[in-house]
Image 1: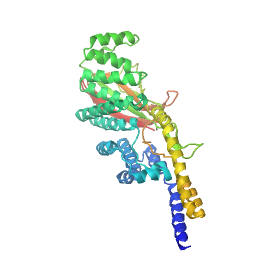
Image 2: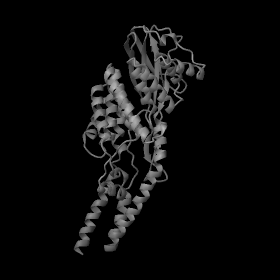
Image 3: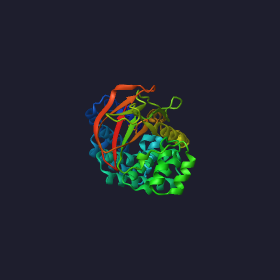
Image 4: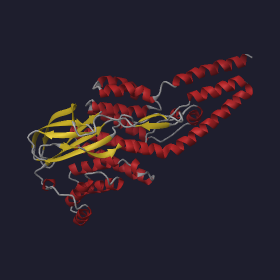
Length: 418
């Protein structure tokens, strides 16, 4: 009787532990920081995220990714890169799970296993590091990340990853970096690879024609000209006296993982809409574009990539949860053979503790957009405005800055809207 009482006390204790776990989801922990970023309360967001990112546990990678993004939004680019580099090293570690963690994820929930990140997220790490370096004007350091992106592409391609997982923006960004360094042949190859991944990127037709000509691949240049007859070449593309202003606009929030309506053990992605859909660039005293400004064009749909990735993973997730239910049944039955009440409580406790794995790099934007403008050397006052679905400027979402464009170089500006 005494042994049964001890077992019952222990199991009741576990029951309350499991129940309390239900409130401590990933989405619940970072929700406040997300709202703080939207309100422009950057320090509050960072104060909420820093302890989570500093804790060495199975969830550290996902919190490092969110913390690094928040640091970038706050303009603390050096700290952002240190955080992303730590995340990159962690993501590269061997995907090792101890037997106890595998058993725990089956008996309790999938969050018992280590978070490793999706393929497109892992490539995004280096894209974010590169964007920070470009914003700081550190082209040589950005080139290192371009090479790192290429290494990951080669690895994942050998793993037969699908195009939506290969993150066309990161490949496009590496092409921009090679082009900024006047490595025109490498730039052409990267643009071509981005086209193979996603031929719908609007400006790629121009990029392929321009980069092929700059790389002196004249036969290839002529082939692209025939393929894209509507493209009108701008003489300023090839004028060494011109520089280029490049705006990298991160728009909105990516979709968020929530428990599926029909099965609480499985996640589903819910789109998060933003008032801002595009960005409009105005350049003071600049007449090109009929004075109407330049509207951003979408390069990468993070929302679509995330949702497609989850869709492809659903078969594996279902199989794991089915195995988890079977494991719970075996464990509770073994306990019930010794004590029927304990067995019933164990079954209830394990199922209450079971829940969908809601971890993701949720601070990613909904889309990545781009504005590219060839400009004569000089200092320019620019204004970026967020626009709504009808193309109307949203006056309280703006960025004003003075930038200097130099001949034969690119000036990068990274902007985030919510």
